[in-house]
Image 1: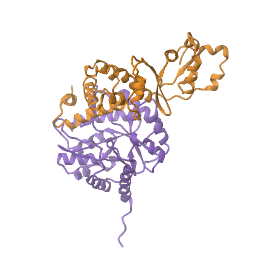
Image 2: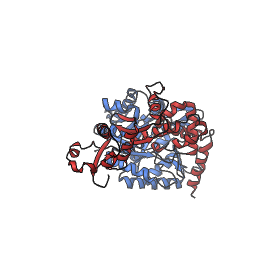
Image 3: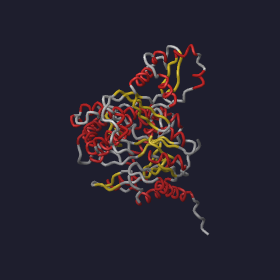
Image 4: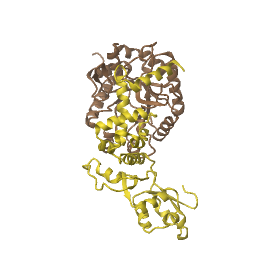
Length: 279
Length: 238
């Protein structure tokens, strides 16, 4: 597969498998959660087989627990490797977070302490995963509702150091930057200003909701106006990249997701238009 | 232990108990991820006990059997045993068997695919070798013997049904399998169930058909339903 176009796609979740397979709407990318295809066989894998010829696929993992102090889960890695071999997806991504300790899984994306130790640890594990998969992966910046330990680095410094050191790419989740900026009181534009455009290989867009203690990255709502604004600024500064609109709860009719993907696509497209020369 | 490991150990301990404070968002995520995984695998158990009971059951189960994988499809395998020992579920003695059936359905759904039986190859087996045929069942086949009418309970609690079972008595022997249209649950007569169990255990056709009439009908049903994926000749079963 050649270079992936810097256009928009959606996160495909089970309620839309049938409609996507039937209607095949034009989308530049279909992202699926890798773990939903870890079975030996069955209908989910059959759906993916039916879509692979029509869409570039992105396998987005939520369970590898890259930042955990536990050993890497070899079963998990073997399943991922088999899946990647079988489908040869355009993108493979995971999260810059941890989920497990002592063999117990939270099945949630937990923030890493922003320390040099954590940078070294997670970067080493990302590198091992890349060696195993024989390809570059992307890691996503996550929402962070609490500090684990004394932070030695700003969030953008932590992300930059881990990505650079691992030799992977950044999946820049614009909503997560916004959520963290609001909750922690920093300027989201400053975050973007520190990102090296050469590291960014994909954008994520998703919705958040307001909770008791601030914004919560629920993926249960449409992309918020502030996040659209931040996305425009990111695209202007960093450049257009493949972009996925995600919804993981309160999943709307497919048409609503397609409309959001079209809006993202228009922003990516506009950034490519040559600026008119002055008369 | 590294500083990172200590932080993670301590935070996991916080997550296991706290409902308030800065960890509350993550605690909620942990609880709902486990609940939702169980609800996806055990819809009939959930309907039989009701949403509130199921939510509490998921919490008790999660405390006793926390998730051990980043793949939540593996979560919930111990629920049948857990409800069998759960004093709160003792009023529903059939619940463990229903849970066993639903876990079997879950396994069946994600089991390996298999190409259809090569009927032409089977037809070429000479009559004098037919006794040595060992069928290989489809990887999605699961066989359960239950002390309760689980097939009736399962059918009555499918989404389109009102929950009233056709039978309230019986000790169902059940075959579960998957085809292109989905997972199927079928109650079987004792002889037919024993025959399929023998085939699943790698018995030759001759051995499996011993001591009963009606074997041909069972084989025809297995073949028509796509439950036979292949066969071998001779001693070694695939």
